[in-house]
Image (cartoon, rainbow, N blue to C red):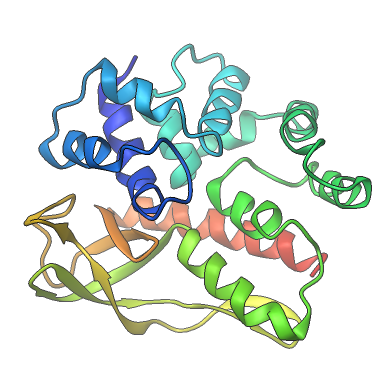
Length: 245
């Protein structure tokens, strides 16, 4: 198993895990592994218990002939986006979605989801925009709540304006719902956490750096190329979601 890939996976899995949204009930151990960069098989075992994300890693790996779901290329594909996503055939994605969500969704919702499979890619933001909300319709009285949750759950990006103690001040596009569609705004100032008890995943970042963000936590620094891939994957996921909102 790739311990480097497992470390990267942990960067993105920790934020929702510490909030109790997914994964095993041991966020302290997950945080320690990643912050101290001391991966071992214990980290792998923790991460296999992420019932939302781990099956996507398995699907991407199997579809591309990669034995290790925690291969760095596979982890990068799911959270950021790369060409491995194109290696997942619609039939494989259809089977995975049916197996995972068939018993948890109404027949109508499942049929709606399957209309997306031909154009979908198993990126985290596809899960957020099209499965997380579990419906293709957003009522006006609940839209703001749903969009706020999706905005936090999606993998987003920001430019660091300043480092302020355990927080970063960043400029970050915000997800909004207007005129019946989801879209991203121009970058807006926001604060995100970077450390817990004096440790974090981007301790060396500085003003001008690009960072990835998940549930208001700075996960990693991004190169311009990684940002371009994340933006491209996000745009694709938004376009697909907007077909049925």
